[in-house]
Length: 157
Image (cartoon, rainbow, N blue to C red; front, side, top):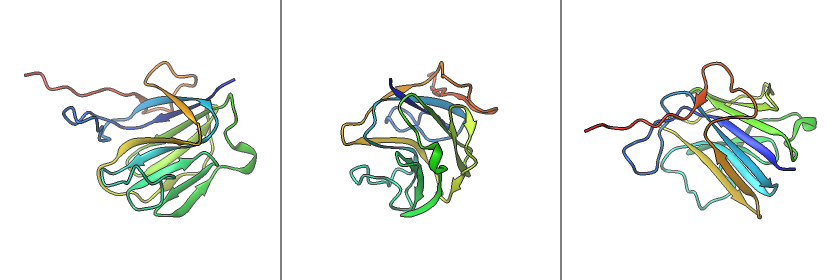
C-alpha cells in the first residue's frame, strides 16, 4: 500500500519559469510509492536544492519524513511520536504565508512551524529511493477551509 502526502499551498505561476510563487490558497497531493527520505514544504528561490535534507537554512521550511519541521537548521516542531507518516497515510500540509501546518489522515496535528520570509514556492524533495507522485486535485481528504487545488494564473495577450 502506498502512503500519500498532500499539501495545501498558496500558489500562482510566475510567467513560465517553472517556479510557482505562493499567492492564493490551493492544494497539492503527493503519493509516496516508496518510503525513503523525503520532505515537503516551502522555500525561496535562493534555496540550494542540491543540499538534502532541506530546512538547513533560512531559505526553506519543510516537514521531513521523520515528522520534524525544520527551518534554518532548527527543529521548529515535530509530529507526535505515535503520528509519524506510515504507508497508507495521507499527510496534509497547509501554508498561509505565516505558518506551515500538518494534517495526518485529515486530522490537524497541531504542530505549526514558521520563520521563513519573502516570496516562497512549494518544494518537495526525495532521496534514498523515495518515489513521490504529485496530484493537484481530487484529494483523499478535503483540504481545510480556505485551501483548494492549485490554480495557475495565465496572461491572456
